[in-house]
Length: 202
Image (cartoon, rainbow, N blue to C red; front, side, top):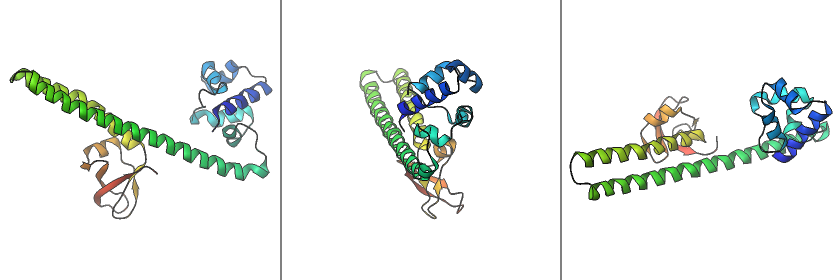
């Protein structure tokens, strides 16, 4: 999606209806700064107000997401193109999140091992060494919990038995045994627990 094009389209439609940014913002229950960001192509309208925005501007959601008014003849083709583009964009975002998750995990594990090694060799044996090791473990485990949140937020886990794609809650994923990104989960379809492999596509 071309945010710059969409922003200019929102601005054109707003002006056609004789609305200022403040007036449009008031009708949507948001700030005029948010409207300004849309029109400059910095941000997109939130999905929760998209329908209301389209009603005010007398356009369809399809028009909005394309940044232009679509005639009925081209509507179906443009819908297909738009859905394909949105799917590609989601895939790109998922891959970015996935890469960030692995980067966080790698840095955390290296930091944890390095910290424990330094504590073992630099701090004399005793209570302070134990405190230092515990502190290092706690500090470097926090990013691991965040990395798990990223892992759960993208894609799904595929059941080995029936092929069902499972999207667990954070607590379910946290409490499940795992080997890398493969987790031992209960499938809601076949009702069996099995090792479910992570897949990026939902």
